Image (tube, rainbow, N blue to C red):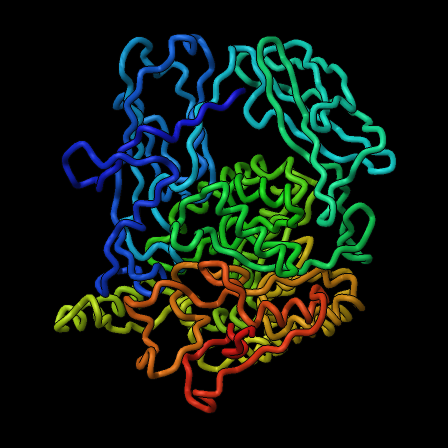
Length: 631
């Protein structure tokens, strides 16, 4: 199938408004255009932006040459509860805001007449996220076209069988039966070719994919140092399709994480999906810039926290040599915010994971899947079983990559005894109290009233008050091991959020366990790296956070009272402040420290702490080492 950009000619408006709407080009973040006020129900989590529901519309007359073709609309990301209509007919509902999805419009378009595609995106039910989500059609839209007999969307898969010699297995799925000609290109040069017969039928149901094994002479392997890529081209009758891929092997076990047979220690950074002042909009250049900056500062891996990353980001990682842990979600069946995805999770998680794997499969940069982040469900029998079920489901979709889940070991224990657990009743009560106080204020836009935090926000605040040692020391309690060991046994790799003081003990106690620091403090970079060099079953580390991001206001800020008297993170704040690289790409002193600690610097650096506030109280944060500045 061939893509046609479907990003121009849209309008958008709030769903409750009348009128023609405002012209926009996709990607578009509707939330970024909303007021930021103290009355925002998302509050500090979403940067005080208001939430609303929107409708996007595009009117167009399709090219007559497309008549009789298979026509499929792809939406890479719609936040959230997307409803897609064509000429007034509802064709699809997709609740998750971070996975791509497809709508077959082959029999729905009228040729020789104007057609209307409308998409409703709902974000008025707040709070629904712990960070800035954005809203609307924030990732690209495409129209895929193909003749009736064609290679199906995501119907080309490439798997490396061996690297010496370089052998790849190509799987092709078609609608319609017949021969498929395959060529592997290095630039314009054909380096391998063959033909395979596909028995797919016209309804798109195939007993199995057609498989062909190809050998690539003198292949250039893909790695973080040499991110070499090839192109697979397939011709099936009148249809053509292609995909980029890299030749690289991946294995994990007692010898660590091996790429092309060589151990690789993950020097990782967590990132959110937004692009700072661009909001949630996914632009190719912005995603590439993010990865380039992280790579320049010594990182070789990113964790897509806490939702599947964009296709543009994966392309950048493939081309620049950055490894990827792609993560599914921030919760399972226990709420973290009042209107989050919990109500849809049980029905949709399998489809969501399938879409994530289809997106990731051919990308050599993707080396691990994560099923979730700080899901306290892993302390419960139901959650332990679900961890195993999700791992097995991902193995069935893709047996070539390991599965983990980021677990905050100490908070798992606290939540298991009912401490800090989110509940709708508590959240509503605190929201109502704060709203009443704010309404009585003389200036609601400037004086947001605090409400008691619940759920993960509560735990973040505890860490900010008591410092980074709070979570790490708490994780060493014996009860924390009892609340996590069964869930960890249901994963390929145990994901430790802020559990570095458990690493050596657990590696001895559980000789089969592999560990990854799925979320860590910058100050532990040296301790981690020295340990990882001795312990291959410690696969790597992902610091919070690599790039700064919108929302979770001030959790990594280092501010003094003469600038921020209350440390209340009101409407004047917009970012978390916890990135080693800030919103405009400036590098912090901590980034230089990390480069030295991870032995990625050309030499030592000197970081200078300003003396004008020596000893003064500053805003609480566990994610900031100091206010040192590089000079």
